[in-house]
Length: 157
Image 1 (cartoon, rainbow, N blue to C red):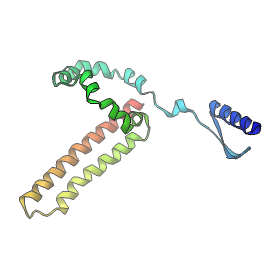
Image 2 (image 1 turned 135 degrees about the vertical axis):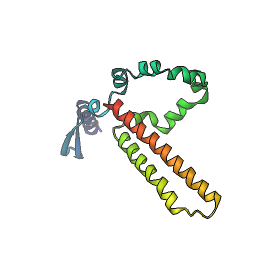
Image 3 (image 1 turned 60 degrees about the horizontal axis):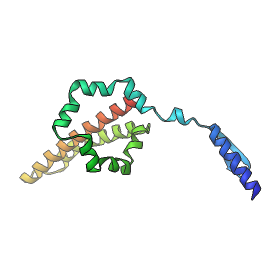
Image 4 (image 1 turned 90 degrees about the vertical axis):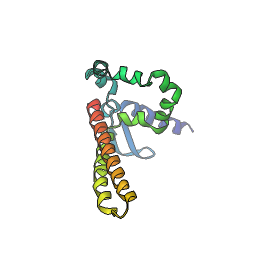
């Protein structure tokens, strides 16, 4: 009991210092240093540094959003913030792999449009409409994913 408590306290102290021992009981096979501050980008600092909010204001996007009915109160009432939290989108914004994943998604979506046009036959009006819809969705989705990847990459520094 007491030895286990000492080992646990010692492991917590090493983890707090940024060094983690990997091994069995008291024998450490390797030590790894980690720096949580270095791994996670300072998203809010980068938003401030890029003057993103003042650029939104100058472009009139906030006024346009308000005129369209998108206000903070409307967002709060819709439960959108809870949904963002449940889907883990807030943590994805600071994950350094997210821009790469979004770029990959964009490339897949860009390839999907031409593939659908090539694979789907043009035997009926419905299939031609389906080709057009798949192509449009893949181009719009790919563009949104690529834009999101670029924005997150810029915000993450």
